[in-house]
Length: 201
Image (tube, rainbow, N blue to C red):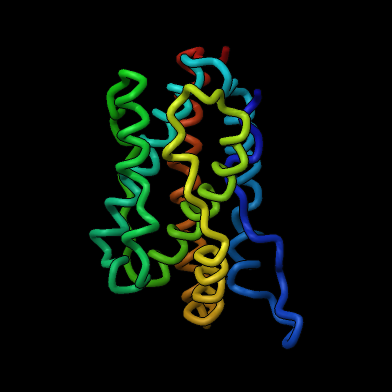
């Protein structure tokens, strides 16, 4: 089964009351092209092939883990009250261990400068959680899937509301967009590694 639609993001662009673009809509619009590129890369991976699936998890780990670490260093725990239950770095490490695979080197460095940047980065990670839950249905039952589970629609909605409340200026939205683009870039780099190493089923 091909891995399509890994990163899922909110389709709403406008606030129905104010008829203004929402923060979530601004993020989605500004990262649309990167989202499509990442989707195309990961759509080449066969999730029912053990080698491909291991490469997929490794690519996720190479981007996801450094992003999580950077969010922690930027103080995400003080910004997002339920951060502890949103973290998935340990889950992807555990899945890789079951497959007998090491945790890969980071796809690259990343730093979040302030609250707006943290929210932009978290937006991408939480979108990938939604996409991962859909992909889980295509993974064989005997493959480890901790990383692809655990979606909470209420947590996603609360994050979107937080974006619209806290990213309340053009500058804050610009910072959030730049951070989200940086996260997408790491996932793209990780996906490209899979193509280069030939783990495509």
